[in-house]
Length: 131
Image (tube, rainbow, N blue to C red):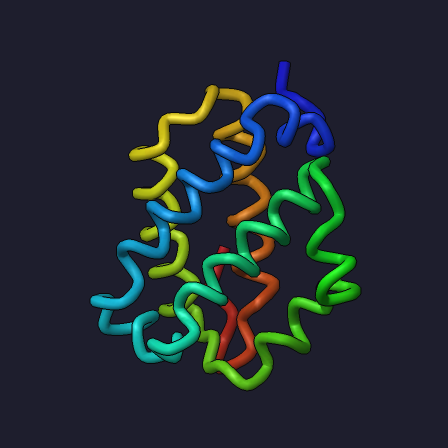
């Protein structure tokens, strides 16, 4: 049985989210699609924001809300060209990070499902990928 979204934080804690997001962002700067979307001077800020968002989203402390307010993901990402190719690359890198982090199977499944749907939702340029 899969854990409820709100139980993920209690299962992996700060450390699990820290390891996952660090593994993701180690891959971003050298990536030809995603790297240019991230200002080098704000790479640590981007890492912190994603980690805090996920901690909040999956049952942890609401620091993200306290610092940034409602996530408004589409609005916050509107300036960036999130194409189907960018979405696919984001997922490829996140999937590698999930493999490296080796979180419990149920948590891994919950996170992959969330990332797949949210990454597709974020596409804001060009056609949507065909199902």
